Image (spheres, rainbow over the protein chains, first blue to last red):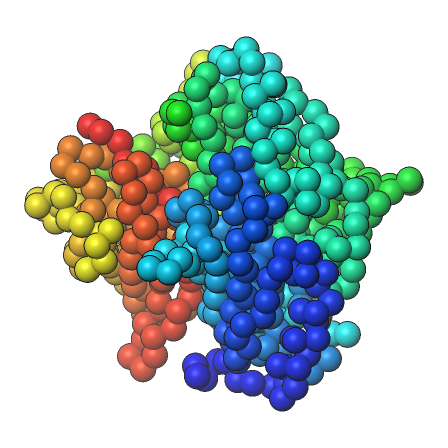
Length: 146
Length: 146
Length: 146
Length: 146
């Protein structure tokens, strides 16, 4: 692990799992928390017809929804105990049509700071025989004390 | 209307209404198309408990979902007939907690070009006695021929 | 003035003028501080042949340079005494070729917060007979205590 | 090389070198083209006191200047013959103070398309004994036919 990615909260994984379960939107769309590691989070989302834009592909806002939560928890995983994380801003590039059976958003911390954490996420569309990068996010998260 | 915002598709409003009805995600979250004008779109979303992040506020991804569709249709409204619009990229700043009874995303075209259109959207949280700007988006949309 | 744009540092204008004079890059490119108001800054830059990209237009990085400084000082103007401002991040859309005799970057605060301030800047290319919006920036600035 | 990063212009390297020499801003600030490979460009900039913001560090706009040119040429390297490249938009996160003897912007293509290319650049500050990531850019470039 990068020396700047020091782990300060030993119970980060349980806290992320609990917080994720409170994000009601994740239940509504059917997203699941797949990996929780220091500075790295993966959220998986099976395709459903009710999550689509006008051509039947996953709506860019839902691509963003899983990427943003992944970024937030990746940032949170490196924060000290008794922190809260909020999204300050993010930018998303949509690279290919969001067409697939399953989507996976993998977020990794780029720079973890006392107040701000910069995080990148890649979102993949996965079928039986391919795994395409469909979007990439670069965002900023803020650490607040509870 | 700004001279660069020339209307080229007389049936844009009907086409946007029809396309919006195909965005199944809008039905799932309960969003409605409130205003359709040349270069300006408003999408309204009543708060629901199943759209929340961990603190009960509207998830930033859902804020983005309505802002992105509003931006896409604002761009589309100025495109020639037989066009399709896709989001290239967007950036969102989250300004205040997304706490309110209703949310309104209002998108306006900044620059309409042959291939690319730049659009801005503001998202407001509305209660009986206040209307707060909670997020702002700056994005790029691309025009494809059908 | 917007109620959220409360003035807290009565000597903000002198401090911005002094800080600007320390930005050696402004002297190198020939930029000048044209307006200093609470939450609003304008920086002006006459075109010079040595500031160009490969087609002779103003380089996007120099467009960004004046927009970023304008955003930083617009944020600073609303910060409390003994603050320092740093750019956290910004996004720039390049709307038209940066072709003109003079360029003007006008930044306005969107949301002023205790730690973070969100600022927007528009950059115009100005000739004798026209004034074109050539770029727009949306950025985040942070307030640090000296 | 990634299959989507197919080389279509055998004289890309000479053309990039020639175009870079026409970017007068690169001469003014003292930047040099250090690496030219398919989908990857490096631009190097020694620190000079006249490129600074108010604390003596490299101005964020100059960090952006070298990152943007690196991104543009990285995109260009994969375009067909008789193309022109223009920056559509970019986002930059400033991660650490831009303090160093030399700066290096390394851009790599994320997705090369017919019209649009998405590029990422990292900017490093380099001293005798350290090499720090000080900024990261995510941007979109457009291919125009000459």
